[in-house]
Length: 133
Image (cartoon, rainbow, N blue to C red; front, side, top):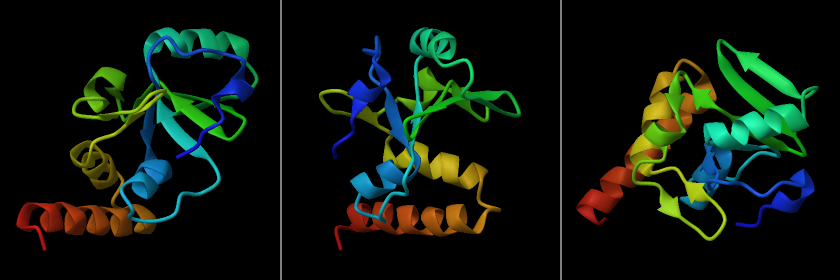
């Protein structure tokens, strides 16, 4: 999975955590959309918020910095980087959210049809892994 981090002109202090479509693609569940959703550590978030002050979204207290197709969030529904990175898969430059944590995030948003479909695919994959079918 190739991600061009250099466009930001910033080196992360803590590896960003990939969530959403890119994580779904990583697990072979579906193709990702055009943007890349991330949760980043507060240290990185503070710096990037200053660097890109005109590209900030506020969704009920979740603060996203949206630049170059990257949506970098401080938290999702109050669940922060430290919580969401538990059991993540570590890559050279980033982390991929665990299946269990992405299942949790999709369950929080399951009233959205796309998230409900994702939820079903994740459950199916988890069951396949458990029963090795």
